[in-house]
Image (cartoon, rainbow, N blue to C red; front, side):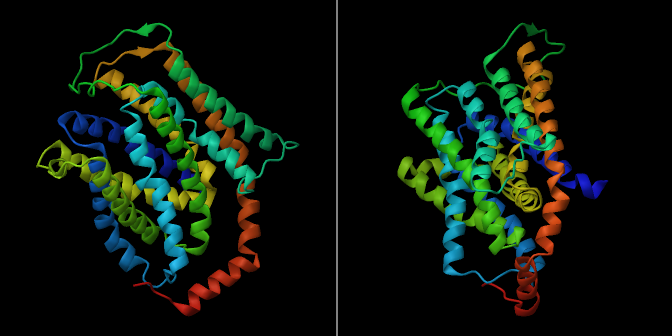
Length: 350
């Protein structure tokens, strides 16, 4: 049972990690941490943490790193870190958190559509499970939209705020610019998950790939920050919430969660990974209600129930393909060739 539901458990834990990230980065940004500097430091920490594990645990199974493969990882890092995260944080300055949340939670549906078009995800509309995958995706998206745009009556708070995290600075509204940045980041994220599936076929070393994504992503983010924020003082960081947010983001999100996502992408596919994204939105709303005494609306509860039902429906439809797909792959010539090359060549990159 554990082996069967291991990807599900790991992705739920990953969403818990993203949930706590929201609160610690909120406090850090309010303290004065520049979001683009945060992205850079976070991935520097992630690279430092993951490097020893990648170097020693995958020395004998890591394929040779070619120029073409390095270029592919560069694009992967750009889609997942350097370009996407920086566009996402920049969009928060010009739009509302409600709009950004709605767009981010549509990533699962976008990933599903792209995966079907690229034949990474198969849908048989004559099969009840195939219908369940489509309906589950649509229902989950509907639940997210319901949480975002419908409020309903307020649920009274049952306790006082245990923490005091004030809101960010006033938003500089520029909806055209903000919308373009938000949409661009939300299109890049599905491409990031899709490209992972292709890269893992040629570089099946998740720890090493996680490290490379952090290293290259940190460098890309540093270049982006240097051009966007020409103030040397923003790079200063003290022994305070800014440091802890960078450490937490690097160890948990740029290290553990990226590795888990790569592993689950290889086992279950990119759509499976993104279907868990709305969970963090639900958890943030719940924790904010109990810990920060923020307002909780009936619409959020109804939307959360709809999201969970849609996700369950999709996962039920997804389960049918796993044994067949795995059996076909491990009996294929591609799998045998890859296994022989890894076992005989023992290539190690620098």
